Amino acid sequence: MHEHELETALTAAGAAGAYLLEAYERFQAIPDAPADISTEADRRSQEIILQAIRAAFPADALCAEESTATLSGAQQTGDRLWIVDPIDGTRGFARKNGEFSVMIGFVEAGQIGVGVVHQPAARRLTYAVRGSGCWRRDGDATEPVACHVTAVSELGNCTLTQSRSRTPGKGSRWALAMKPAHVVESYSAGIKLALVARGEADVYLNTYEAFHDWDICAGHILVSEAGGQVTGTGGEDLRYGLPGAWQRHGLLATNGALHGKALAAIAQS
Image 1: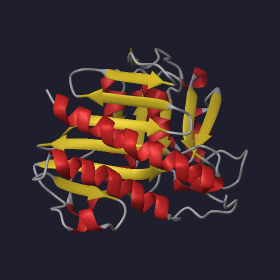
Image 2: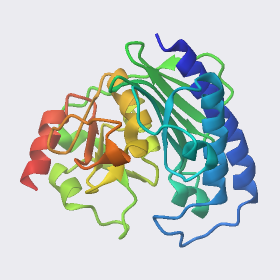
Image 3: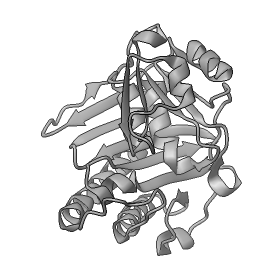
Image 4: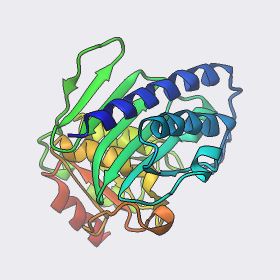
């Protein structure tokens, strides 16, 4: 199931990643890049991805972050919907710290069928198909390796991944409530969700009041297919393809064993 969609997503992510590596090498770093920065690389990456998808599935709907020609000419909601973030973590790209990813998700009848998170600078690829598990290929590897979440069952022993703090060294009240053993920060939600799916972190918490489908869709299925759990910060089911592509429930992704305890900690914070 969804073999063609996965092949298309992997090919598109690879082409966008190759372009982004070239652009990244030429890019002049912006040390104080703001959170809402958008670059020509974002737009070109998106066109590469959307054109590849349109070539393979011309009738499918497209949902993506940037205003580009291919997106403007397509239906943006539908039963078969591609959700794309051409550079997730543009601040990481602009500041040249390597913390950015390409995210491509495919949703059919409201269910995520495929997710690809490609980290060009780190040469890490993580992908999943509904019902077929989560897989990774890193560096020069040609054979995929299965990903599994951890078995950590106490918050005090967990590794929490979250967005980079505006005040380095100072955790959010939610992070403080969980009292994790370690905290790993990144500009890219795709990277953070991949960390949980790969068993390199146990919990990812996003407490933003509002963000978009493309920020999390591709990474969501990585965690669930690796054996973890993804909900809103109040335990809500997350839905994709709603008008405006808005997500308004935050995000909690865990290894599953920690999910109830994490939800309780959030509720009490």
